Length: 134
Image 1 (cartoon, rainbow, N blue to C red):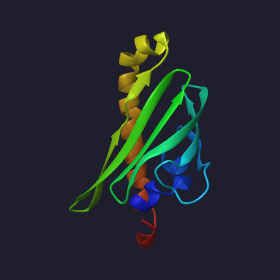
Image 2 (image 1 turned 60 degrees about the horizontal axis):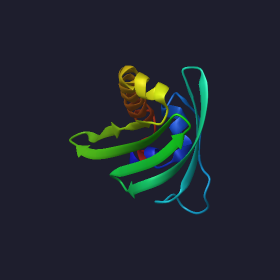
Image 3 (image 1 turned 30 degrees about the vertical axis):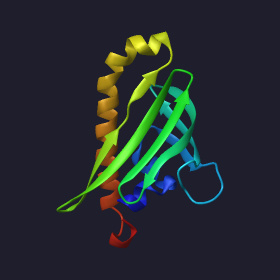
Image 4 (image 1 turned 60 degrees about the vertical axis):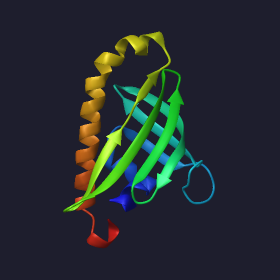
């Protein structure tokens, strides 16, 4: 599963809101690497430049990003389980606009649904890969 999470080119295959997710900085992916993220959420196109804040193979991948409405952090943590790995998504959102601060409690359930969907799609994506590519 780590091979999929750490390969940025796979993210659009299991994160349905993403249109683009690619490294902008030179060299191998590492803490400090910059990533361009373009996503569609509720018919809005959002462009974000993320920075990798943690990269602890094969356990944790974290990015921090922001756009005009909010700052966020996304951490994917993998823990070994009897049959593979369990992945946990932690995705705190820090609203910057008054509108988003008011809407945040209502967006929470939509974000939790989206996160559950991404976790399910990641599992399906990994299971569809040949064993050596996981």
